[in-house]
Length: 182
Image (cartoon, helix red, strand yellow):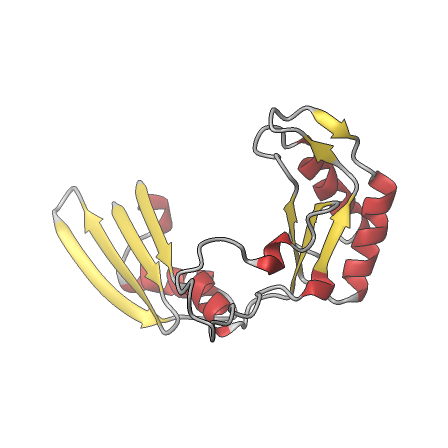
């Protein structure tokens, strides 16, 4: 059986194709915001798609973008390389209305008080320039925890070339605040 599910803000839609019979079922159930998986399972049941019979599964959702647009998602903190705390807030990417004197940048999704720095630095090749400061990282996690953050985004410079420092930061977060998502 091939199944595709779209979890929206209001409804969860499912399409189930039984390849053996060619039967197609389209069903719709109410989305369960507190636990979207419940709505998916209800949709499976309504479409008579037993989970153990599913050989191919496609999942799509607008829940994440909806939470971002309505600012109803988790309280997030950002941890970045020392010297780059304000890069996120500066929003110096493409400025479409370049000559619009009344232009105002959109409000940041993460307020400045939830943007933190940790001593560490890699070059563009992923080579360590400044070692990861684990003690400072622990202090940062304790501060984040005191602010009530529910999730932490770790965004170290050049981690695409070497994820070592980000993985070390993740370990520190899991040790100091296992209840916070990374």
